[in-house]
Length: 384
Image (cartoon, rainbow, N blue to C red; front, side):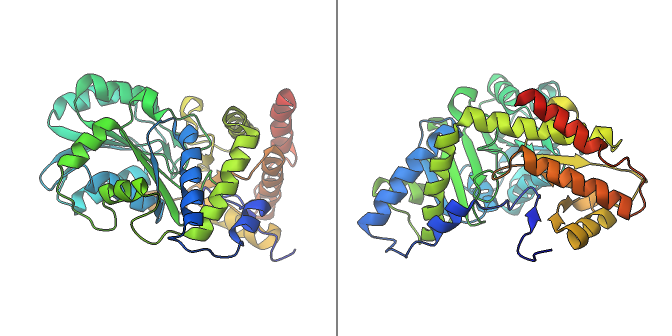
């Protein structure tokens, strides 16, 4: 094996396209120069279609979690109440951020592997009439669930005057998101998932409703003060030092998105999801998510006592140079997750399925070689 030919199939960070890597290698420019301002503004404008918004999209030098925290500290104060929809590790992260700032987080918790549905959300909000914000995770990376954000947004609007704040870190750019049409008030994502960049950029947009609330708040943060980003954006820059090389790469990512087109990108991710799920079923490996809520960006498999997922992951890495993800929190060592987003296409899925089949055999699991690959191929053939 070539040591540098790592086959990365985790739900982030994802592989970086060569043309994006090349763009990031451009010579450095001044981050307060007119040249950077032009790059920054045209790139921020090109993010709007993926967000489904006419609002400005702010580019922050930070991880996706920094944008989650921005969604909390710019809208709520200590003593406020919030509803947090928890379907996995990242919904729980939203709750922990709230609690760190003295906000009461009312958790609507579902079993990991299930989605939060409108039928669950309606009575929950009725039980908590004083919440000022509802926090939700679109794709719950830890379980492979895609929560029905459009329908949840409708419930929030019908039941409350609360802001609806959504973490779309592991799916925006790979699935349809219509911030304005659905009624999302704050939408955040990160660079290292469907946007095919290294970790280090966060993107955030706020509705007019959200800005009315933000403008009334006493800032709780310095670096994460969203009003500072709006003020600097008006001057075509950022309040603090931007990650210039990553913005070079982001411009190239935007070009790639426009060349393929968002509808085609969404279909590609749905196809890779369907191929992966068909393969796992053919190998009789239990899937965590129901078909209705299965994410197009990551698939989680729960083998139970059939074999050790960590042994599978170790064999994939050591013998085939393939890296997949394990479980988080109480699912650590109990599941494995296959990422299929960003710079990934259907033949890449067939490659990783073949490697999974061989690795299962190598750890003593008698799966029929080729059955998973065949099932994935049959799904692919219908779409080609």
